[in-house]
Image (cartoon, rainbow, N blue to C red; front, side):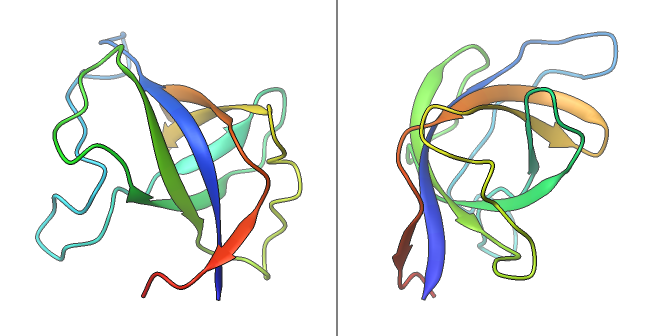
Length: 113
């Protein structure tokens, strides 16, 4: 059983550090897995590894708010207890913030792989 969260996310437009692009959340890469960035709770410094496992079955445009599910990749070795319902977070690629979002549901457990 893998834990997951329902989230609502929005990807940012171009900034001085980030070349804007659209995102495919559901495995649009060569090995078929979902997009795997880090989340960082607003006001915190810890990076939390996640993998998108459900979302729109198309490219997500910058500035578009979408709902998705994310797998908590390193649970239970990493604590995701800060990602509670309503918690706001940033989406990071390395040190670059590429989006923002908030947690829609409490942690759930399910079979995805």
